[in-house]
Length: 176
Ligand code: IMP
Ligand code: MG
Image (cartoon, rainbow, N blue to C red):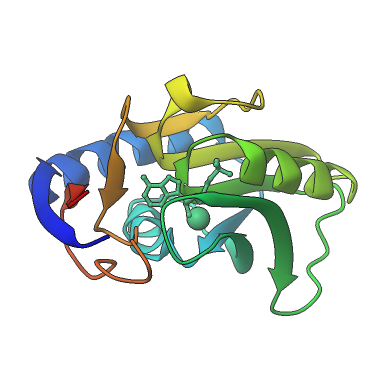
């Protein structure tokens, strides 16, 4: 399939406003608590770094790689968890920062893996929540935008590893 066009969905100003609004809620919810913020690579890298700049506390910052998608748009249905090194999460307040929650399979898998490590609390921040496409129940505690349908790229989100560098969010249109 060939790429037909990118249609702008939210510009960088819209994103900036949503990210600071989410950070304000996160700041209020974690007053006086130690937090481990985990960036889910690769898609969340831009959202994560902008979100972190707005926090008024100093979290422990970690990175995890979850691989569930192949080259295109379709989920392979398989999720793999890759840590850079071991992270001790026992009795920690963990904030997962993800790019987009779609079927919910990746976040369901990750939440269960982290619960097994006896975390104290676990919340999810996602830039985009495609809740209408959910196949597995996953609650997004901090959602930047809700999108009903379409494939979203830009601001960290990719299609076949492209478009992550774009500062705005777009709907990708493919030629049939
Ligand atoms: P889920 O397991 O179906 O919820 O899929 C979540 C993962 O699939 C996300 O972390 C993304 O990496 C990828 N994904 C799902 N929908 C989109 C999209 O619209 N654009 C880019 N990546 C997506
Ligand atoms: Mg992802």
